[in-house]
Amino acid sequence: MIGTEICLIKSSPVPSATPENSNMDTLININLDHGDPVMYESYWRKIGNMCDITFNGYESLSYFANGKSLCWFLESKLEEEIRRLHNVVGNAIVDDYYVVIGNGSSQLIMAALYALSPTNQPHPINIVAAAPFYSSYPEMADFERSELHKWAGDARNYDKDEPYIEFITSPNNPDGVIREPVVNGIQGKLIHDLAYYWPQYTAITSPANHDVMLFTVSKCTGHAGSRIGWALVKDKEVGRKMIKFMEVSTIGVSKEAQLRAAKILGVISDSCVNPTLDNFFEYSQSLLTDRWQRLRQVVKANDLYVLQKYPLQYCLFTKKFYETHPAFAWLMCKGSEEDCEKLLKGHKLQTRGGEKFGSYSRNVRISMLGKDEDFNIFLQRLEAIIQELPDGN
Picture (cartoon, rainbow, N blue to C red):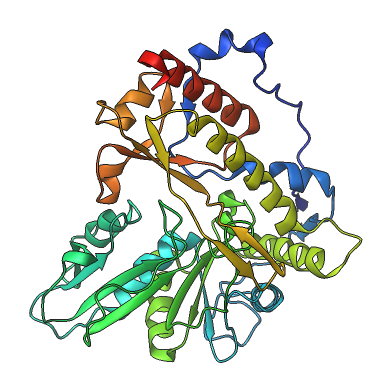
């Protein structure tokens, strides 16, 4: 038996939102809550079968990989392509780092918490992040009701003289801002979540060089369904503990998913160095730039909504100055309507309210990574909301 796994999937195109179908789309609920990265589908369709990969029935039978990595289930080809891509982009130091693979960055977050939590403390170590923080951090910290760690809220309010773990998400989810540690205590341990530190989202200003750095295929390439994430870990013992967490919870990571990810990362690296290929990051950046320009055009025409602003920065990868175009829009409602999520939900726009990020209900997070037709309908409805306001504000 021979199975195939390919990036190219044939299907009929979905019509985009146009005036002809605008009356019908009022019945459709548009989900902008999740960061489901289907925006990238157009690139992978465009390059055809370059990502085709075939698996034979006698392959990948063993739990163990063939490499000599500290992470015993990490396929050597994937490790090679991870290190290559970081070197090509220049967004992270990989020399003298251990690569730990996981089932998406979510599992790696849990593994890092386990690895960094002391086992000889009388009470769980506190987990903090500066608000607005990634909405899943509190749930992840407390989900297992572990005696090792517990969620302690906004890092800006943390003043305890005791050990803690701080998440630094940069660019930040939900607002896209570049982040630094906030607490800066001598007893702190840091986890740098760098899922969005790629050139399509923000300027690469320097290679990241932190003790624990987390990345994910889903936000780098758009292949969320493959569930592949990786950590660059400086300390060997921390790496061992993270690997042990994966070993106990899932006994490793699918080899088929790893090899598919390796192929995709390799194609992206090739596209960056081969001028005959469509550069993946330039293509993706152009899509996000267009979406952000159109959204700002709608928002600037009113006094109800405000979007986060970003400075121009020089990118070492593109050799250009440009503005951050995050995967999410952090929208604030300034009017009398305090609950922005509720307001948009009334127009069948599903978003994620600011309170889930440790912020205010007047804020919402809106995914910029969805289908073209959904994004078009979102802009149409947002503009309609603005036009319904008295005197246009």
